[in-house]
Length: 406
Image 1 (tube, rainbow, N blue to C red):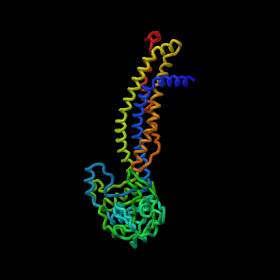
Image 2: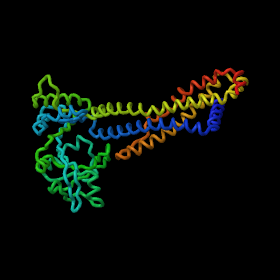
Image 3: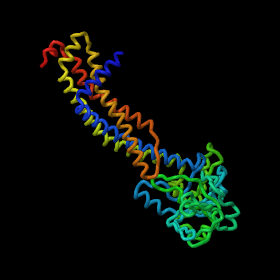
Image 4: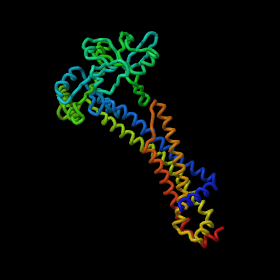
């Protein structure tokens, strides 16, 4: 009952000064909204990227000439490295006993045409038949190409959902002939839709046998990327160590020199992403927290004005038996009520803004427990921190002087 009475008194006091309370709310709402927007957007993007990376599987890793690049100096250093070729793939297959499957890949952008419809800059991947066993590339229609297709260099193609929509809307694509860089291919399968990540359409691709890729595009200009699946999750590190030994020996890397290639797992990529977003998050949240500090100062000033205006009321309450702690709690309730209300509005507004922003790059987000917790914690913290001084001042008022205050 005491809590209910305090809430009613606090609500009545705030309602009696609508303009003042509204301005206080606005400061808190702006601060919490900005923090919530930043955290929700970053958390949403991280979750979406993590989901895409999970397609690699927990026992899969990639070997490439250039992996993650974080500076110009690193780029120019890595660009000098020798590209991978099929000889390196064969060496890995022979020398890595803990590698279950090894699949080289090559990439090129090409023009794909079906009848009078043409698409430019489509990512064409040349891969071996076991690529689909390494990477989670689910089949929606038809099939992926087989080892026989690769051996006999059959011109078959497995397309992404975006190509199906753009070229074969309302038509069964299986068995249809399309042109890839001026060469005829037969569609044998369609992949399940994967959506977009950071504005990059994951369904705008096609996969052809690696042996045919070389016929159409020549030797890969950037060399091969190699996807490898270890025999088990427990043996992943052992498989990576074996591959490292094989490649360092075949590429004649001195014992005291760093690897001239990169090896990546989904966890490696996520670690780098977390480091980047952590710094970004701290910087942006720090900037947006300025508005929260301003809002907190506004709360404190308004509560000080409220204490001055209600000095006689405080004196009456004390003369009727109210203790210091009762007055303290009363004014703390008022401060918390306004900041928590602003915080809740800010949480909802921040999430909606973040959803719109992330939606612009074709991604979706769900309410983040971290963001909601931060929103509630920050708003209540502002109320407690900036409301404690006015509340203590009110609680310490001498009832005799308060009653005679004009």
